[in-house]
Length: 221
Image (cartoon, rainbow, N blue to C red):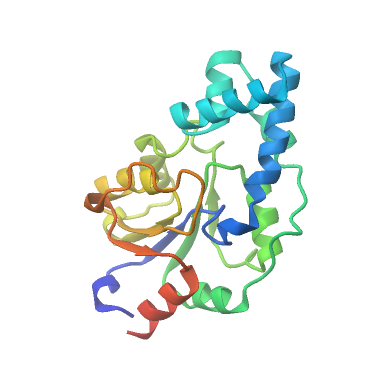
């Protein structure tokens, strides 16, 4: 293990575009479903629906948060609808999976998605039994990353010492609250939409474009 990370006993991973390549573009499929949902909700055309979707994502952290705040959307109805997608674009990466399983200590998922969808993705990736739990948007009371409350609740719920934790995330802005409470941070900079927004070295300890080689390097040191 890399000496600088020998203190880590909790390995916390974002899900989408972190445990699989951003080029798989599952969000492209989810985007279509979000657009359909917003069109039905607001009675608008596809162009207006997309503008609303992206504006809420940037202003509220997730499209869902904006819809809940401005339109009283039922979060479970929304999440069930938008996550009803094919996962054929992703597949197990045996090398990455082996490195994840080799990490000493606890392995956890912290996602702005919901647990049913996250378990489907993990199963498709061959990682369904590799993580102890999923801390999802329901557990965060629908207040998404990067709001600091979800990070505190994560640590309180599962007795995690943030100073002995490492957080992997493709959205740079979501690393800031993690660093603020003492977590070591890794930016998986692999081309996610808006992944670079608000990126700053003050809260990014490590940066990688490919998770598997990064894990290989820290494990062999």
